[in-house]
Image 1 (tube, helix red, strand yellow):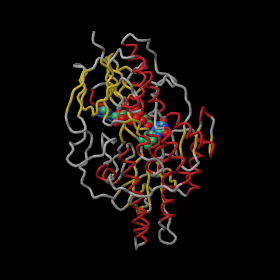
Image 2: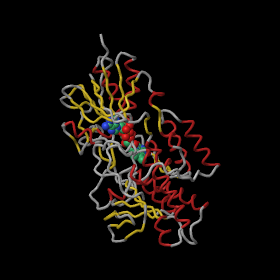
Image 3: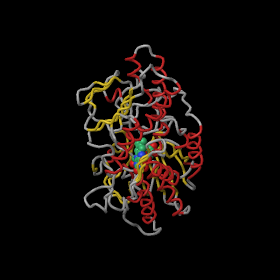
Image 4: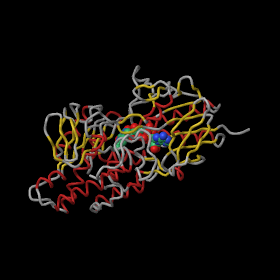
Length: 450
Ligand SMILES: Cc1cc2nc3c(=O)[nH]c(=O)nc-3n(C[C@H](O)[C@H](O)[C@H](O)COP(=O)(O)OP(=O)(O)OC[C@H]3O[C@@H](n4cnc5c(N)ncnc54)[C@H](O)[C@@H]3O)c2cc1C
């Protein structure tokens, strides 16, 4: 008898955990295929450290082939799902199409940058959702400081050394915190004109940083950012973005060559193409992570609206913690649907949150206990090391090196502005000349590099 075919689409927090758990549960009694555009699982929470030159990019890329046993990896991006024929169509990295059949499907395609209809943002801002964007930002920031150090005019120097981050959730907050330390280190070795310092602005329309988290975490992050010299502007956002700067909603125009868009994410557009009910763009599933009316289809992670049984009427937020735990329950329930074990609903207990603010600083509330300062920093780094499925020694080695050696402040210039458009359905891939247009990408990639 042939083995049932399980197809998992997406190898992020949810899909990776589903594959790993299913491999253990089914013990070769099923054929598990994992479809993903890259050959790695990206550990996103450490991405700000890649942009800030602390971690080398491969540290946060967990290899799929080396860490998932009995799972067949297919490199490609799903672009069509036929629920009746039980097939998924995909395009591989060289543009060739293919079709995969399944008996059970798990959709775990995550999310992409959220756009808002603000003039000039799509053309002049960059998101922060994938490795190419982190590499771009690291090089771009280094280049701006180098050009500023050589600039004759004070205005040009100031504009190059002003960095605007929009969105004070964990991504924007960590990025601004790490970014300020990074540029301070850069100017120590390449001093700017007398009296000039790199300037980082963190904007959000919300009244406080980390608006969706415990207020004690917000207060800690706010204090660390301000002490470090980050210009924290709450209740303010962007009215218009241009090549030369940003017009704020309070009327001020900030001269800058850098606008990082961290206003949040939206579910990957693949799930809306299914024609099944959505909840704010996320594919609606039941507490067993099954798509209603399709017992052979499961969804989890950012792309799925999973009922929060601890808060009736609400859905679990888009976080790595939830996606990781969804993945385990999805695997248990897929296995149960094949007669292996019994199914269970998704329930969770809040384990707290960690926000790395760079240096030895962090804000954390493990199990609800609020921590700040070096203790929070140690807990945060320990948490990430424990949570990463691989690469731990390499990450720890980079952290150790950071304490004894200066960062390597060179820009390789391999990822340019047009490689990483903000409006992209595939932030995990850098756009390259001649590649087929990505679905969901509206912009042509021809603007001048910033
Ligand atoms: C910079 C940053 C920092 C963050 N920090 C934290 C944090 O500290 N704590 C926290 O809890 N959360 C954090 N998050 C949020 C967290 O990373 C997400 O909630 C989590 O990654 C969601 O997991 P997922 O598996 O749904 O999606 P992802 O991890 O994004 O994985 C989706 C996978 O699907 C693949 N994919 C996408 N489209 C397709 C397709 N069409 N076909 C095939 N494969 C596809 C992608 O390449 C990717 O591998 C952070 C997010 C960012 C961007």
